[in-house]
Image (spheres, rainbow, N blue to C red):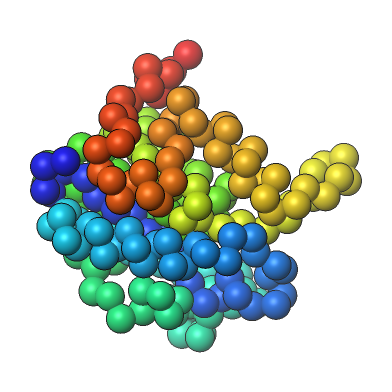
Length: 198
């Protein structure tokens, strides 16, 4: 991979997701795997972007100026090339303009990790694909929570993660592991044709 062409996007790795009120997350290795990715991207000289969710919900632990809005300890001491603040699901709808920043630097590919697998990480991957980026989704460097379906069935967090990965893979992104992402040449990603519409 040519330096500067593949950006690592770390989505919402924030302390608020460890609040007991949020429920029990899966994949306790998420933070450590994200830290491995950040170190690898730093070594390669490629861009690292941190995304922070500034919740507008008054009771959310992720709202600004609360401890839960801060980054998790695994990356808290890192200095990213760009920090994007958002209050919606996609990192591309935050401030500053992520797409514009990446375009100015000639970035054609993005690698996505963080929290949660099926919400903000997945949405960011889908939007990135529609914008024309080659997308990698590092599923073992993401984490999520149990979900309840409209029919009332409770899906465990690992099942939610598998379903999200299955929905993304081959359609919006190449779903890979941390080890594969760190290899940087194990996967060749092409923008799925369906990104332009079915």
